[in-house]
Image (tube, rainbow, N blue to C red):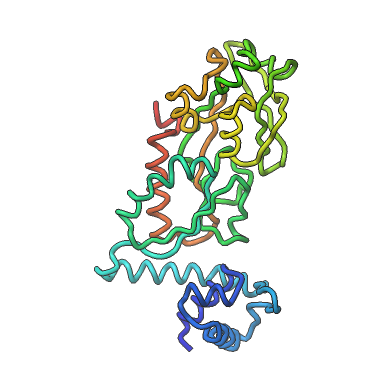
Length: 307
């Protein structure tokens, strides 16, 4: 048994949740992968995986072993890369999850630059506004807006999103321009609701003007849980939007969104890159985090970094 191949096969089965999928990514037969796992369990004298006809689950011993294995595999990858001129650039697969608007408007359009620098890195990109369980879903890192609820994660603050309030011209033609934020609460005006993944509910927005502060929930006919759908609803005139500058800017320039309450300010939203605690940061993850940090700094620099 090649211990490296066996550990790699085990890690891939855990991540894929399937012998078949793991075998496909490793370019091995399912039989070979199964044999490697059996040999590894025999050598360790523990059961690493529970197998059923439908799925594969990692045991408690297997989960602890997996955490050690992925650090060891990453160390080996770094060691080989540092010694081999042919492997001078980082390589391998990264599992990343980002909000849908950030992916479509900033990250994906910039990826040609990333691949020009790091052509041997493969990215599995999850695009959603749901809260990903980084550890259970074996994700290398996530980019998320708002304060992080899981304080156990390692995180780097990479930006601050400046927010504004906007409406489409078709909305203004139908409902008129609200003169004060309170009109969104007690009149015919409507917002587009955004259902945050953490709670499944819309949350109020804080606005400030001189010594006046208030929180607006707003009344909505439609609420969504995806950033791209939220933007599309606003562009269709279905309600007032709260948007970060990077999302609103191109539509403002084309006259498709109009700013509201310009004498009010909103609290900025912090943007983080987060990754699992106590896990080795491989070269491929390190260069990706650095690249994302530089990219977001061009669109939404951290507030204290601007002073």
